[in-house]
Structures are given as structure tokens and as C-alpha cells.
Length: 87
Picture 1: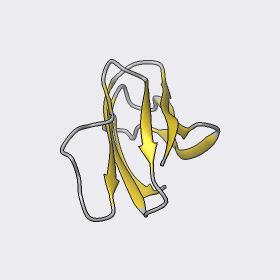
Picture 2: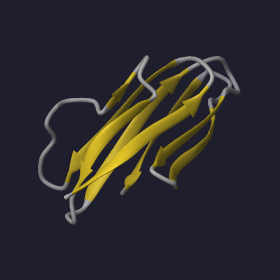
Picture 3: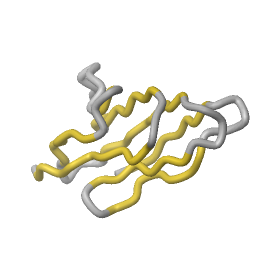
Picture 4: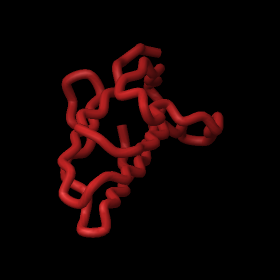
């Protein structure tokens, strides 16, 4: 297990980021507004993540794990950005 830094670069808005283990989710969001940075335990097993961001339309964001970009973009015309992926 390795401790890494999960970080969201965004100017404003509300967000929730969840890291999910392969077979289990602890029900806690690792990154929750207003926090933009958190330490997370990464295992060698497959883990995923999902995020929900609500901000002004066109607000740019970047979700990173240490120096690795997990997601990058901007909120849509409705001010929402959602996504998921594998770590």
C-alpha cells in the first residue's frame, strides 16, 4: 500500500471525489468540498474513482493523483462535470 495525494485544481464550485476498491467501498468520499487535497491509500489491487463537480458553466478543473492527471476538463453548459476511471 502506498500513500498518494489526491488533488483537485479548480477555482470554485462544489465537488465530491470517491476512490473505490475493486470489491468494496467504504462509503466515504476521499475529497469533499471545500477540501481540494487529501491523502489516499493506493493498493496494488484495481481501484477506481468517480467524481461529481458543480460550478459555473465552463469552469476548468484537473483531478490529479500525485503528478498523474486522472481527469481534466471543464464543466458543461449546465455547470456539471461527472466522470469515472481506473487508478
